[in-house]
Length: 199
Length: 145
Image (cartoon, rainbow over all chains, first blue to last red; front, top):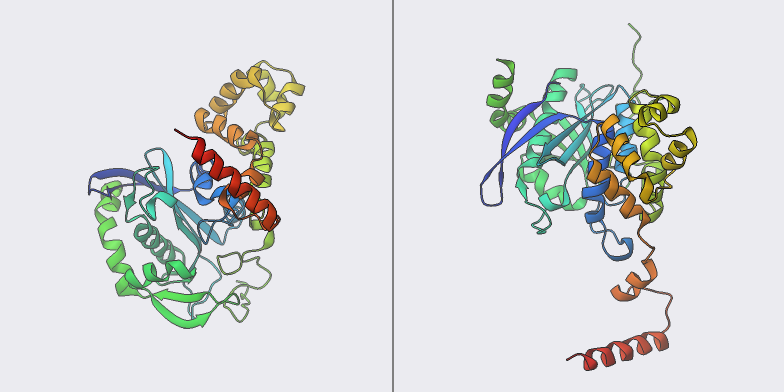
């Protein structure tokens, strides 16, 4: 995947240029450990977020070493602002047809709430799902995505047009699915940037 | 073409599948401090290997002995190694200030107990100690101008 230049908006609607690109393991691990990691934890290592226990460097390393997965990162202001790990092969959706499964998706702590530590960038999560859908069509021929949501993220998935399938993971995480029309609505804002790149 | 075989979740059999709903214990952080120490002692080695470089090659490029490179790779960094760290960051194309910050984070003294007390989350302290601490804090507050 060729990197895509995209303009996000900050908390005051100021433009923030960013690069949507495949993960570059070593520099991105360093970016995650030195920027995200200290903000994921509170005093004495207490976990501030539901995904604070994810060993993200090891997850990335394993995913990059497995051809079934693709990892995309969004970089802005020299820092990783979000990432998505997508299972693009050997997965069947609830209808029994091939589609992609979003294994992990996360945005930086300062992009979830205004923390004051860094400038909040809006829309990172939406673009990550849109990019996951583009990966899905490339590898499975379908824009459809499925994922299991952490409880605090369920509102976000409803907001972007995903629907509950009614199934749960063993840990009780709800399964969500995005169909073609909703996926297209997410992808549409990216198209000018993708077309610009192709020209 | 080989016919793929799927399990009941639609996944190819024999593939380790990782996801938010299926996170193996080796992909979780149990102890943040231990995680940082592990990062400190493996990061530079991983960075070198990712570039496909051998220790000898890198030590020659940086004009340091193999033993110094090995010591730094295992996370034992001191003041005199900063130049080497800078040289390594250029060879491996990684951000030098972030690399320094990684070591600063990992070398930070363990303040877990103090922080737990401050957060008043320590389940180990008994009620008498809690009262003693509160009295101490009250006196401290009173003594402030």
